[in-house]
Image (cartoon, rainbow, N blue to C red; front, side, top):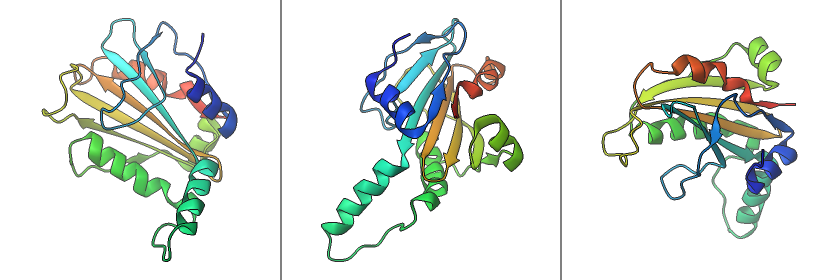
Length: 178
């Protein structure tokens, strides 16, 4: 299977692996819809779409260093490994239409053993009605962080609450750190 070039590059750059979920087909990446992502797959029934995003921390650190260089004063996060919680919370807030939701963190030992990450969490939400009519009514956001490497996001979008949620959970291991 051919992956999008930018997704393949990010996998290599961050030392992550992606396994195409069984029976899923690649789905088009929709630009300019409020949340940038690099790859997506669609379940055989079409009731579940999983969207993947990888934020390379070395890339982000280089961008931040360039911004600091161009400014006389800098106010921002100095440790790139501390930005993941704020970014994850902001992403969840935006995707849910401003709902005040909390992540359920995975146990540290489990997230290390199963994903090779330092931190991971999940949150589910109902999508706001003002979203474009793509038919997805709810979602679950899974976030993984590995110091000095990457923050990775898997967004599962469901047409109906609970329908194929078990399929999403079965396939959360499709993206992990090596």
